[in-house]
Length: 570
Image 1 (cartoon, one colour):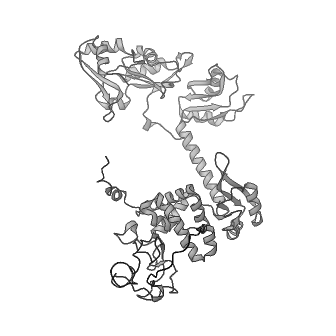
Image 2 (spheres, one colour):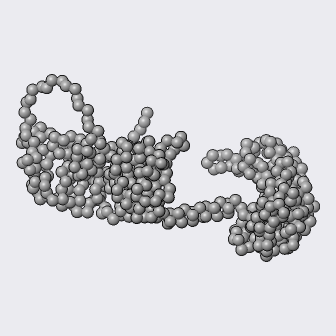
């Protein structure tokens, strides 16, 4: 990769007159792509360069020299190309070239290698004519090279190779006894047809690794051998015989098998498997079994743990029937276990949860354009700086009518039109009444501001001078659990939202209102778990953003970027 034009010129100008040299490089990084073109003034000089300099080591690696083929169709057609396999790992490109040298004019000879430069045990040789390739197959196929019979056959393009199980000629045999040799294997399989290669794989010490490969000339013979010899008892072990597969095929088959088993398990335990969150740190598998044992027969029970063995605060409990699981959800969801309220729900696959969230979000009406985050912002209530509110899907009160007690309105929430999704929106701090222009006692929603008249019972009286209180110790703010314990259900929702919104805003500031509203529709105990567990919150926020993007409701990243495009940093 570090070879330069100057190095190549010094090397090839010794053979003849070099007209031009170009090392092919990446357009962006300008790093060498590992090959180059050299033009000579005479065709004889090019021929001599191939004969004398081919496989010469340059910067520690042997180079391959061949005639340039400007027409790609000749390279891709496979004309004159042969495939060679069962090569010993010690066979090099030069050895392969010398092996086929007497069959005709060789255009290219290459042993396939991995990223570390180690041979993969097969290679390709291309001749100038198809007749030379046929001669190579007849002459070299089955020849012993480094004490291994090599297989030589016509090259078949990848898209033309048969990947199905209906047509194959290569067989994989495993569970072989240590005494089974290549000859034993060949004798057993040639009863079903002519073979082109038979090999028992060995380790570095020459001992059998217990498996091998058999290649037949005809697919029909290979299929018959698999049918007859699979399960064959050689007196020591029972053979396993099947079609040889590439690693990619085996991996794809195993993935499909695993996915099918997973679907079958999901269908079997549909509605009977429970997902638990917000578990106490001291809760283990046995404790879960004791807690849920009264609801029915438990088939499996597990607390999820990290690599250090610490509880992740979640787990699963599977019952023998959906009815038992439903009863457990009804009675255990929200129940205090230790110091935390337990969250219990029917377990769902991740894709099922995302599909449900997407369906719920798509049913909501789109918000009017031109509003930040897709939501309008409203000034805060007088004298309540920093307050936050919810949209409640109830009917708005008449203009100037009293707020408390109106049907569909929850104190502390702003009423919105029917069907509006419940998004959590921070309130902007309004001017204090009695300050600024206008009559004293009018807040941001008073006359002259374009808003509704405040009810008398909600108006704030003018400020009165009061004596300066003596310094006293500030009482500690009540914890979230204490606030929830003292609040009614409607107020609990507002309190949880106030605690959740800044956490979501720190993760997704442009979509905090939408995401918070989506999360607040979850069960209360699960939302509390998100407030406590930053990792679980981050995962849920990412899941909600994925749903927003699929629905086309995520904030426009370009619009956000435009806001900082004009900044310059010294």
